[in-house]
Length: 523
Image (cartoon, rainbow, N blue to C red; front, side, top):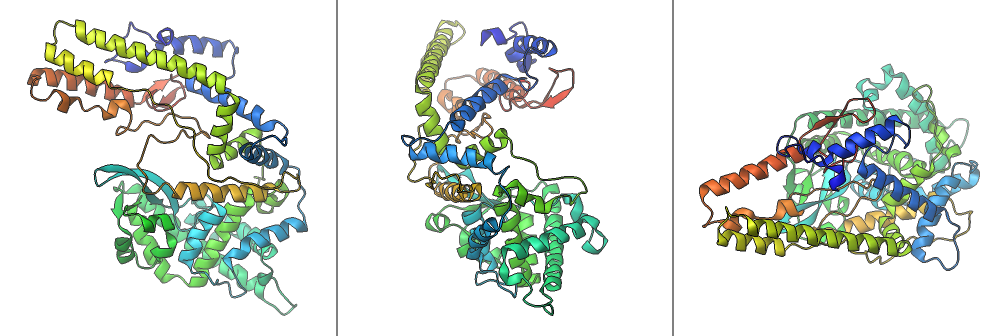
């Protein structure tokens, strides 16, 4: 760690250079000499790339009978994802997708036995897709305790935002979209295929798809306005949601866990939801149903289908085509949908390496704590009371390792290679959605490491630097001058921590945030 620092720099003038200066100089030289890959431009990128290589090696191994259910699940998810690149498109895939979409019950009238509010939650829980809004988990203080609560956010639309600026009649990309989407819907729903030469279902479906596109344009506009307003997030109870946004049946659009706990629902970009409520009241139910049905196909089913099937939506923007999934893509999918299984099996496979790192960190932590206590105790400018109080605070700090999760159930499907990634991914989406919603109401802890990105999460209310209440600990015996001095130093550090920096490791300017928060160009 000391070898990465440039201690000749004043940390309050440039904390970034103080903490990373020596590392930046040496790494820039290695990159210029082409000794290492250009992606290795930070300490965190080294950690991330080394970890991902280990994980790929683990997941690429052949499934054997002695593997645990967790290991089988993650190996088969990863390997079936790669296998989807070479799977031919076939009538079997058509039948499989048809059976998966039957839950939504879309009939010839382009309506469903399910209400749009029921379909909204089914998209998430059954297909891992989002309709009118996304479901997320965040932390909020509820009755003096920080708990995991449900956050709702605007969805990501399928087409590029610029496509929605023009109405369909003046929009060449929209017409290509319709040309590809109508036969795709008919392929996966026999109710929407013509039964005779006189049947005009093709024209009716295309008109309905055009109505859906206009509805998406309204959503796109509402998202743009909401995101440009810099509005604060707003929290509601379920009853308040129903009162303020009555065109959504919140008793079925929210998970049962939310209805069982007395925790608020947080709206991200609340003006979007006000606009959405109006849109749901103005548009026909069949338009809303088909919007959700199309979302299920395009964002829930198609991404897990073989490349040959995904090519149905090729060339909407002239040249783009469905790309093969790389090992990185398939690893990221595994880490995102089955992170608990990966953590359990990685911990088991590399148990000795992990023990060595934990032992090292424990030793480092003890040394830092002891040195800090010694520094406080030996400084003549502090009173005995200050030394006693600060030594007590430092002695109370603990190093906590992330616990190994207990997994109540996992994706258990046949190890037969004929089981498509389509099914494995669908079951993984269901497991992921269930586990995410089960966190509602739980005491909020340090966020799980996002394995699929391996970035450090800094939470001011949880991490050590943000949770130490020094002021209350010293209130009453520190002078105003001493307290101001401490606050100035703390503010200096925090300003440096979050300040944006311009760093160049490869000869190109790079504007980025402080090193503790992100990985590129930092330690």
